[in-house]
Image (tube, rainbow, N blue to C red; front, top):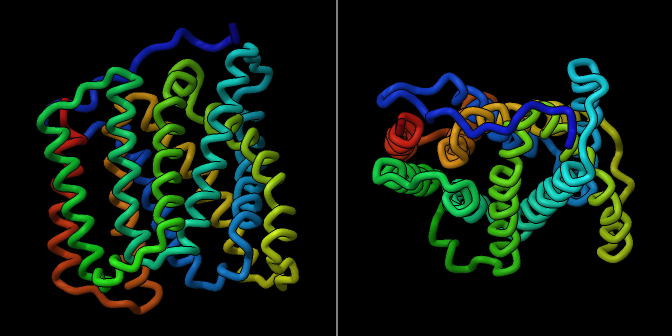
Length: 310
């Protein structure tokens, strides 16, 4: 065995009616992911999707490694635990590649609505793999959060376009949602045995060479361009995706998982489209209607129900 602490399960989600302090982690993570919407609007679409995934992972891995080497020097792991980190790396690599490919093949409304698959998959996997409870309160909260998401997205996009969904794109996004659910649930034992920073770091490091192997395939087989001019905007986008939406967000996500059930952590994923829209309004001058407010309230109440299910 490695030199970590004895594995323990998560603490109670929260005292009934009160938010658990650990909820700040996944909420921060979802907020940072919401910021990716603005980053993409600032011209990041010039980079091919798999190459983008590799750059994001590489920057995130370096950032996390610097931190973990300072905080946890000399840690050792068993061969079994190293294989678990590699497995998590494969899941997270699959997630990011599938998400970028799926986003490229679908429109904004389809992509936004399909984000609901991630917390649903996580909740169900948590029940099946970690033996978490599926209470009526938690199920009702998740359902309300889903309804709220549909209302928010319906207020921002033309949902009539859903009928023309690209099947490959939809499947890719669903696969990405399932991959992140697996990363969350199967990462829980390592997070609770060691720490959130170590689990996030070594799974990210493991994902880098896996995705790197796909970059030349993208460039050669799909004739993707590699002549993008490196501008300050592009460099800032890479830094944001690597440092904030990968290193900081994945650590924050796993930090919540250290003391909360996977299902309780997952419900905060619904905050991502809300934060993205609010940033679009603030930074890009976009507008929202009453449907956004109504959907946001319904979603927030659903998150509250799940987060305070103690």
